[in-house]
Amino acid sequence: MIRKSIITTICFFSVLLTGFSQANDSIDGQQLLNDPKSFLEAISNSSHQLNYEGVFVVQHDTKMLASKIVHCSNGKGTTKINTLDGLPREIISTDEVVKSFFPAFHSIRLEQGQVRRLFPNLITEPVDNYLKNYNLRYIGDDRVATRSCHVVEFLPKDNLRYPHVFCVDNTSNLVLRSSTLGTNGEPLLTSFFTEIKLEKNVSNNALSPSYKDTKNWQVENVSLENQNKTNTNLIIGKLPPGFERISEFTRNSPHNKGIMIHQMYSDGLSSFSVFVEESAPGSKTKQLIVSKMLQNSLSFYSAQVDNHIITVVGDLPLNSVKQIVSSVSFSRSSNQ
Image 1 (cartoon, rainbow, N blue to C red):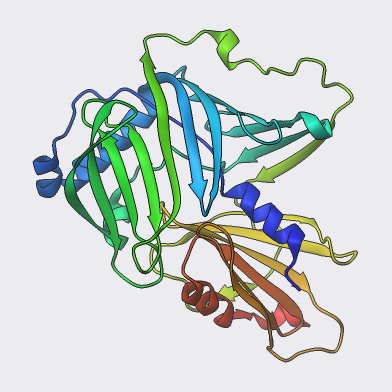
Image 2 (image 1 turned 60 degrees about the horizontal axis):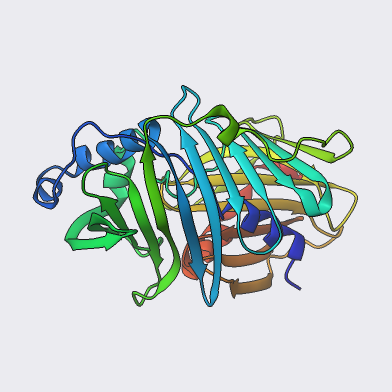
């Protein structure tokens, strides 16, 4: 049975976030072909320096979700996002803290440490890791939200991750549209601006929480600091090249009274999560539990390894998450 709580958790970690900015010099398509590193650095610098506001849409399958976004380069890179469709939700983020408000449930979620990166803040320095794992190809020009942009493909150097396509603003180097493509070139997940306005200044009021009276709301604190206190002794024998563990933390397991360990890995563009739980006593064989492609670009694979249930969910091809789970082992001390 697919573990809905785990899927909900990872979907939460892989949907929205932001950062924007003003670049000093725009880069044309021909420059990209000659100097892809400078192109990526320009995108990264852009996402830290710009003040802007707009509306963007996230589309997968037949579903679309629109959000209003405001970003201010105020030393902390503060971003505020409000969903315009479905249940209301507000996100206020800096480089170190993400605060999410869920008014329908009177709850607040605080994430501290290694925070999520979401559209349009998709490229960060150092940029060399992108070039080690992807080939960049300039394929032409387009227009998004009335602004001209260069269309650039990120083609993976292996079959363990998906291709991506960005449309990068000609003058500001902002990512105006991003798409994750499937193995047959079909769009799995697309984010794009429908409105975007670059601002000289953004008022503090525009970044303040919309919900003032929250003293009786439930608050969940999640530290995403990269730490080794969990002592899982987990070894991924075939970790896809370029992926690094960016965080590890524990939470109560939704399936038993034990602890579930959650590790997050990223290569800069793609990411996946590993969930580790203890299985029923006495069961020590590796056996398939479930393997499935989820909505948008997520793949799900779960199997038993020794006395643990290992679940991997990520925006990777199914063969990649299978490889990750199949190569998991534990050092001897974790199984004694």
